Image 1 (cartoon, rainbow, N blue to C red):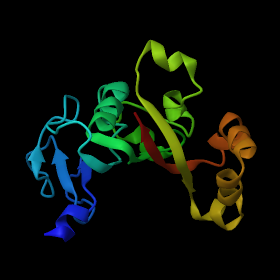
Image 2 (image 1 turned 90 degrees about the vertical axis):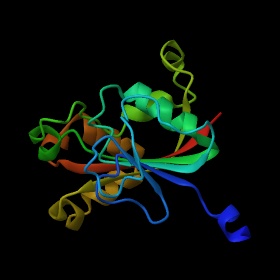
Image 3 (image 1 turned 45 degrees about the vertical axis):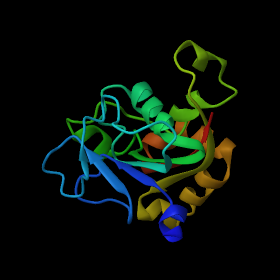
Image 4 (image 1 turned 90 degrees about the horizontal axis):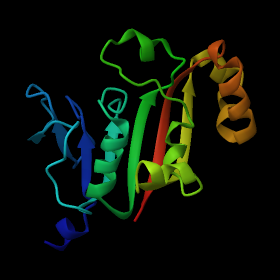
Length: 182
C-alpha cells in the first residue's frame, strides 16, 4: 500500500500506442491502444490541478491547435516542482514539414517564452516553466563530427547554429525538460 503512494504519477499526453511504464495515457484518437483516457488534448485535460509529478508529450506539441493552451493545461495538472518533458521535431528537420498534421515548427528557444525572465509572457499567460535540460538530436554524421555535442554544450554555439548554419547542419528533434513553477 505504501509503495503505491510513493510511486511517481506520470501523465503521457498524446500517447498513441506507446507510453512510459506506469503512466496514465491520454489521447484524442479512440484507436490509441495505450490510452487509458480518451480526451481531446486541444481542450481541458480531465484531471484535477496539481495531480501529476510528471507530464510527458512526445511528438505531440507540434500537432496541437494552441501551444499556449496546451502548455497551460500540462502546467495545471502537474504539481509545483513537477516535470514537463516535451519532444518535438526541430524546425529544420524534414519530418517537421512533411507531416501535414504538424501545425507548429519549433526551435530550442520556442519555450523560453515561459521563462521567468520573459516579461512579454505576462501578456499571454501566467504559466512559468524553468528549463532543466535541453537536448538537440542530430543526424549521425553531425554527431560523429562533434557538432551535436558542441550545440548541446554551449548556449552561444547553439544560438549561432540556430541563426545561421542550422539549415545546412540540420537538427532532428529537441527534447525539453522543464520544472513547473507555481
